[in-house]
Image 1 (tube, one colour):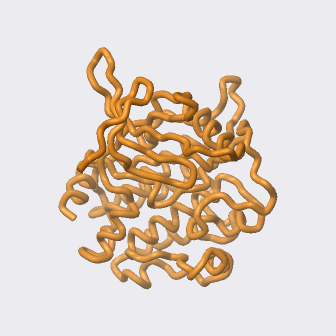
Image 2: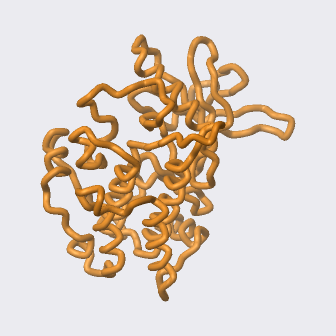
Length: 301
């Protein structure tokens, strides 16, 4: 039996659709003059830790600068009944994590054309985030730090949506990460970050891992625990996707392996540069698929 809807300020809250270390996400509705608006309502879990409150408030502040088709739209944020919230676009569709796990036991790897399309959309989202400026025109220096398959949804129109900027770092955030503390999931954290160095290229490393996992339907860095995973990130020889999936073309191998260069100076210099290279490969015969084609394939699979 489903729980009765909850009234939370102006929102009617329905089923929980996600839960993380510091917040829950529920499907909710807001009544407007145009009718009912469906939203994803993220609410901070009860906590006495000032760091978690600061992270949540930093996310709310950063999200108002991010307005892009490939980033979940933020409608409102605030505090009701002593609980902080962020109201975001409700996106219907599977996460990339769900898609990869489903393909692993059904169809196998995600087709190259689909992977290229999703890779380009993800680069678009991060290029936007990395280059945002504040009201005075000063670069915000946003780094997502948690680009993972679980934080990406494919909508029913085939549009990729990146969300959860809860661990994002920027020049104007109030929460300062202590030296030696790593934010993000170890299997997607860049090697230089595990040693205390971080810039926007850490997000490009994560794109490389995600594209590898789409093409192979297997985790790249999957240790028995966090320490073993971190050591694999730092030291494990990185195989080309084509070793696990011989159908992967050399040009796609090159895109992924450049993103996975352990030396950031040998990685793609920006999300835009990586996206442009992906588009050059997409332009070749047989590699082009639009977002609607992605949506049709996701429904089929």
